[in-house]
Length: 275
Image (cartoon, rainbow, N blue to C red):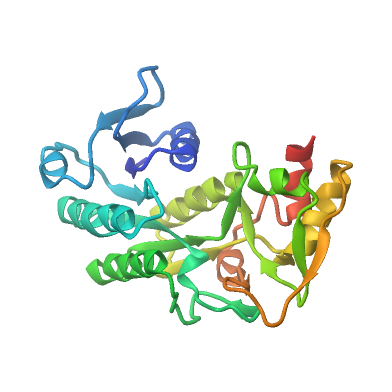
């Protein structure tokens, strides 16, 4: 049993807390606006971007999960959490085992390449660069800390692609634009799995790419969703060259460790959401 601090209690952080609580771990969650209803989580109101707020915490924890998201798409919003907030949290909890949730947005590849944990991370967008720098800061603080890069997260409440498919959108068909995704439940599953491995004394790598087994062209995914919902199919769009973000994520390191995806493909994951 471990005492676990979750910084960022959105859907994934809350789901993680529920899963870990079921295993007997003691959970504390930092949140700007904690819920008032009782739960397995001991919520503490705190602002990680405020040094005073973080330094005032009186907590003894073994493990830290950093699962934050910026409150906007601006550079300043990302700096607030991935520079100031991260720095404050690392300074407050320097000796704990850390799991830092990142994103495959740290990859700048755009020609349909396969990427894994060892691929170059040279994104063009400043917001993605800040996430990349945050990864580096976490691992530099302690090489035993673990970075987990999630691809496009979907699940209950994350229905952007479903809404898109209902509108018969114009989608790039040729050349194919590859997309990558992971179901929200697998995000939680991966984090629980990695913590269990750490507590069991298994050696962990500094980084894991968490994406399902099926990187697929957006045209294929939207066409399948439209058919499942009996909507009009997408309209084919052909462009010269390939668009930013076009890559295929390889998850072999995570699977070699023993993780089994609950939803290994978009078909498996979206089937229940379509219904």
